[in-house]
Length: 175
Image (cartoon, rainbow, N blue to C red; front, side, top):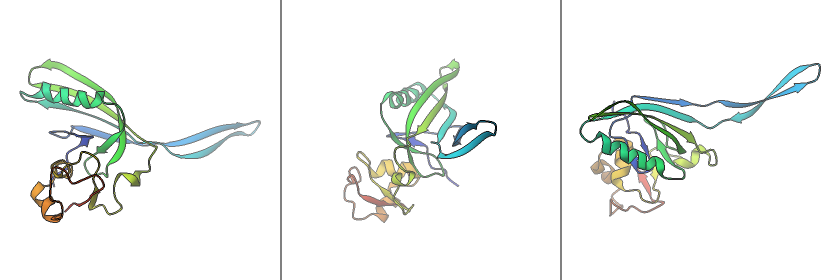
């Protein structure tokens, strides 16, 4: 089984991180009642927090870490795609370089916070085999995000003439 590469905004990890943890907790209100103890109230689900770690290796590891650092420095919300999960809106909240300095390996840790302003269902079209293009998407970036070839994507979408500019709002069928 081939895993989908992890991606955020326009950055696609060349190799998925070694660990990825997705945590979610409920918001619980605790209210004291005089001479009766406490009352708990379920206030709904909290946002997801994604933490992970990995390493870039090889002669280009410093450049790859610099690319990831540049994405971290960008402001705003972006689409986060994790292997085996539907994409969702998130903020890149933390990036740490870790480990011993070596010329051929750079370790890192990261954290993302889900943007709770939009419901999860807005990040993908209701049919999980259909992807709704955002500004700047190309068939090449979509194919990489889903771990498939561009040729397979073009075969399912013969109406898209220009793979480098399918257009914002275009529905792309993913095989």
